[in-house]
Image 1 (tube, rainbow, N blue to C red):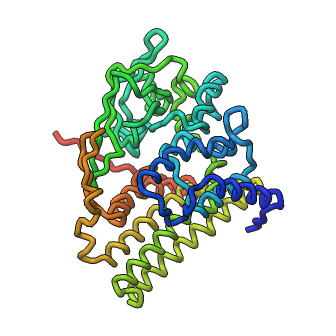
Image 2: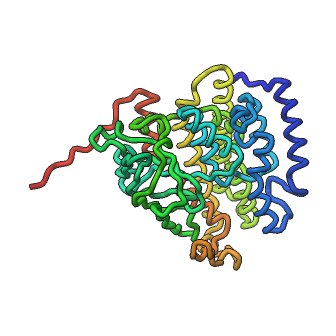
Image 3: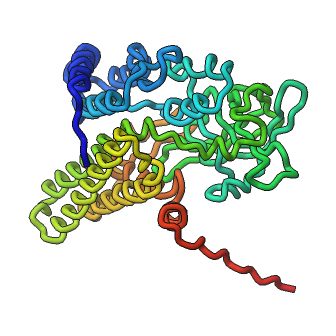
Length: 411
């Protein structure tokens, strides 16, 4: 692994640190700040526009689209400095991370000129409309249809597990536009406006009372004919496009939140008097080792990208398995440390409040309990661990495909 930051990158680091010192509220730190909760929420709400001002919300994008035109190593430095100070996370990351790069790669000039600057400024919130009740891992079997009528597509069908759909302005939707074509060949990638009468959004309330996931129902929902990305019936190829540039930027920082969680688990163990327990120490050390492996693998991928390699395209499934299962097992350890206390609702009175906007009552779980519940999902979304292992076996190692079960026909 040959990785050295050039002097220009370190000069840029000084620039970023100075900007952060001017922009972040006094006392803001990696573990939070002394800000009152309303002020903290207001700053988090304003953060995307603050980050967009110097073009750093989509830093690698060309300046004509609202980016800063940064090199890969400059993007890495930016990510490292944002992680160092615990900067707020983007509440709608799929715009900058997924649909934006997709439009950059596949979109028409008109689509790029309209959508990309808005994404870079954070003025359009996006959600992803891929999964369906009977089409999750087997995405090619989706049934939502889009029929061209005049200058509009009419969509009918259902999507599920759609994060933040209730607050999104647009959805990038995979729909079947040619029912007669083979499953993969008849799909199109559409940019669908969400604020219309033909779309119904139903929240899916989780066990912790949160409801960021939704069911989305399309009933003759309308989408402009020009909002097809990559051409009609080419949606499968568009959806499967993987652009590794932004992933490389996060390669040296993605392990940090798991390291922070381990620090929290250690503090829980000290409070419970378990920090010296041999079993706890062995399990904690194992998780620490796994986090370090994530860090070194990230550095290895970054070094490969900087030297013109393409490892990023092949280690994605391996990385997904590693970080999601590390995250899950760390939270298993956290609840084991808490013991019976983990069964007690300890979120406090403020957690048990009615969310009037969506008509739901929050469940008073503690932060540890909430993170535990979320960690269950990370091995599922983005491709289950089972699917990822098949991809590694078949596409990376070149092993034979997993045999499909032969179903017997009953008379």
